[in-house]
Amino acid sequence: MYTRISYLLLLLCVAVQACSPDKPEKEPALTPAEGDSLLMAYAETFKLIRHQTYTEVTINEPWQGAAGPARYYLVPKGEPVPDHLGEEDVIRTPVSRTAVLSTSYLPMLNMLGVASTVRGFPDTSLISTRIYRQMASEGILYDLGQGTQIDRELLLQIEPEVVFGFGVGEPSSIERVLNAAGHRMVYNTDYLEKHPLGRAEWIKFFGAFYDKEALADSLFTTISERYDSLRQRATQNDPEPAVMASNLYGDTWYVPAGESWVATFIHDAGGRYLWKDTEGAGSLQMAFEPVLEKAQHADVWLNASNYTSLKDMAAADVRYTYFAPWKEGEVYNPLKSNGTANGNLYYELGYARPDLVLKDLILILQPDMAATGVNADTLTFYEKLP
Image (cartoon, rainbow, N blue to C red; front, side):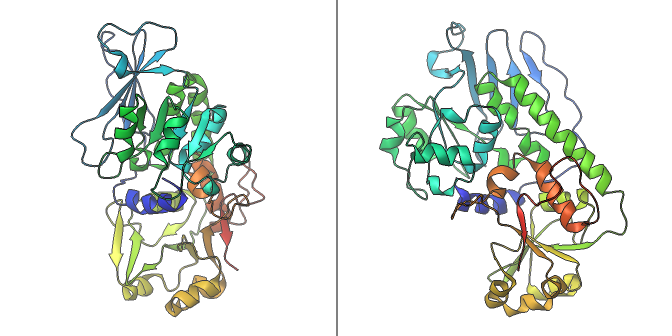
C-alpha cells in the first residue's frame, strides 16, 4: 500500500468504521493456562496474548471476508520452540530485517527505533519520513517497484524475516511467494479500526515483533493523553464553526457519515460537522444539490480531495465556487509531504499521530485557541488552499 493506495484505503476504511469516543469495556482476562491477554484501550482488530515463553498475535480478520483469524507466534531468538508449535508457525524476535508495504507503518517503526530493519518498500519516492528517504538514497532501503507490480525477485533477495502487509477483500498474492521461499507475511488491518486512537494503538502490534512492548505502550499512552487533553480543551469552546468535508467524484459526493473518523476528528476539535447526526461510519452517497443546500454557508471545508488551490477546484467543477468556504478561502487539505514530490505526510504519519491531526484541526477551526504542547505555531499536515 503506497501513498496513492493509502488514499483509496482511506475511502474504503470510511465504509467500515464506526467511531466511538468512549473506551471499550474491558474483557475478562484469560486464565493463566491460556495466557494473559493484553488489554487494548481502543484497538479492536488485533490481540496480543502473552504466554510463559512466547507471545501470540491474533489478527481477527486479516482481510475482509476471511474465513478465520491469522495467528503469529513470537518466540525470542535463542529460546526453544514450545512443543505444541512447529518451527513453521513461529516468528523469531526481535525481527532484524523486514519489508513493509504501506507508508503508514513506517512512522511507528521509526518511533520504536527500528527504522534500520526496513530493507524494502514499494516505490520509495512516496516516502515522506526523512530517515527512510536517506536510507533509500544510500542503497540500504531497496525500491521494490511501483504500484502493485512489486519486484518479487528483489523482495526475496533482501531476505526479510517478515513482510508487514495487507489484504483488501482477499489474501495478498505476495503471501504465496513468501511462503514458498520460507518467509512470513504478517497482515496488518489497522485501517479497519473504529477510532483514530485505535489505529495509533497498532504501535503495540509492531512493538511485539521487536521486543519493545514497554516502549510501544509508553508511546501510545503519551499520544492518547495528548489527544484527550486537546479534545477536552477544544470541546469547551462555543460557538462551534460549521464544517463540511470531501468533494464530488463523478456525479457523487461521498459525504463522511456521522460516526466516521472525519466526524470524530471534527467533533473533538470543537467543530460542528454538518452531517454529525447521520448514522454509520461509512460514506453517504449524495448528489450535488442536497450537499449545496446543507453546506452552502459552512464556515470551513476540509479534505477536498488532493486539490492544491482554489483555482484548481473551480477548474474541476465550477459549482465548488457556490460554497462560502471557497469564497472566503477557508478550504484546507492535508497536502504536506516533507519536500517529496509524490509523498503525503498525512497518509504516512497521521495515522500514528492522531494527536497531531487533532492539533491541526483545532488550529483551523479555532485559530484563537492556543493548542499548547504540540508545536502549536504551525500546521503539521494541512495547508490552506491559496
